[in-house]
Length: 68
Image 1: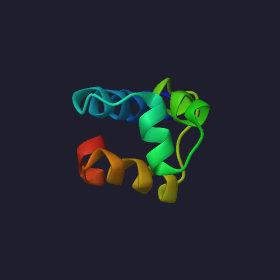
Image 2 (image 1 turned 60 degrees about the vertical axis):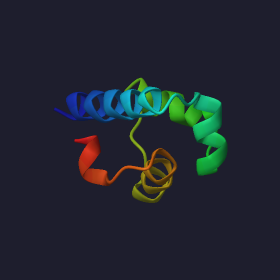
Image 3 (image 1 turned 180 degrees about the horizontal axis):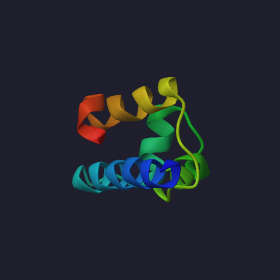
Image 4 (image 1 turned 90 degrees about the vertical axis):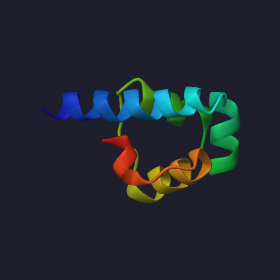
């Protein structure tokens, strides 16, 4: 089940980022995180902490409900 959640969150983040036409680098820079960290989230390898996720969602201009 954990893997499914990781994949769902990762897929949602990637889709939102692509819809906005933003690169990994651009989102990571604006959210003050490492590009490789964002890549691991999008690939479902790790899940972001709440504060980090909030920063990314703010950059993407969406609410947390949009991710699930």
